Image (cartoon, rainbow over all chains, first blue to last red; front, top):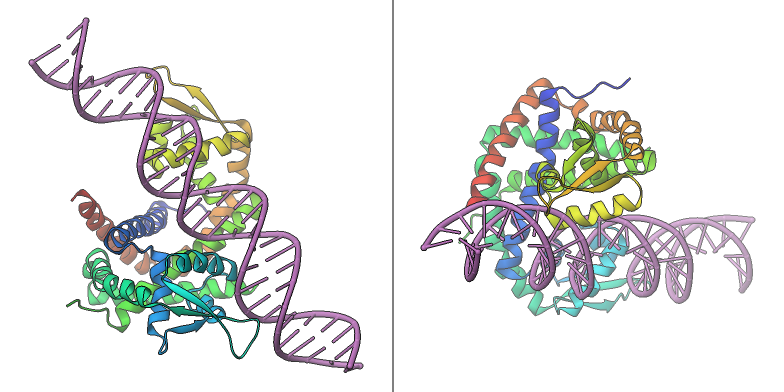
Length: 153
Length: 153
DNA sequence: GGTTGTTTGTTGATGTGTCATCATAAGTCG
DNA sequence: CGACTTATGATGACACATCAACAAACAACC
């Protein structure tokens, strides 16, 4: 016999799901309209643009955004077609693939970032007090640690 | 010139994104393995099974899960093919479509719910203190209210 | 050195979500 | 009534994510 969720638990859980969905939708729509980038594009361009030479190995890129290799490969193919990134061979490891951000990719992320950050502020950060931030930092850390343990089993 | 996110703000924001993605992945995988239902199936079966006659108009179903009509229509087609729901004509409005949960659908949600709720508890609720719940309830309510205003513009 | 197992990246098939478009039916207002 | 607008649902095209399978290269080991 399961313990069902009481009213507040249920409300918090549903709010968590709904909040994320709505936030994602708003941010994606704005980012796309503003710069032609999807959130997935943006997520990949961030670590690429932060890398000193603008080159990251595919394996490491996958790790830094938490994607599976297959998803990354498919998405890189589409971004390559749009001229945002280029693929190069990996000198150290003949299996590897290096991903290079192109000048167009740099322009895109440079143009998109300020507005996107402002959107995140306006829709999320600005509505949180310092106490809220502390609480969320603590809660999210705890929950993710529990999830990580869960996945190990 | 945008105000960038400081370290804690950035950490909280990234944790929020990552937490949701990981939670969703774990819950979906478990639900699917356990009962053959996706989270989307589950989301639709809940309001259907809670309706007194097991019948809900498509428009209202879309509103109660927050989906677009197109997405609902596509998903209903797939669920109909699997025998989880059936479509019927709407007596009041000739445009309308009524969605009925089938006996198979009822069996599926009935079998899935206890385990799924337990999974939500184990991965989310159980790691929150009463104070956390209060804080999250407040924060999520505030954020969603702000988002709703945003969307009206 | 050759067998075995692992890592890396790609590909094709399938399920799903979004968008634009459409047909039909209600509602609105002259 | 009749023209116009809105609401509802379905559909096809496309973008995307996941899964299984694969090929190539590396690593480990006897």
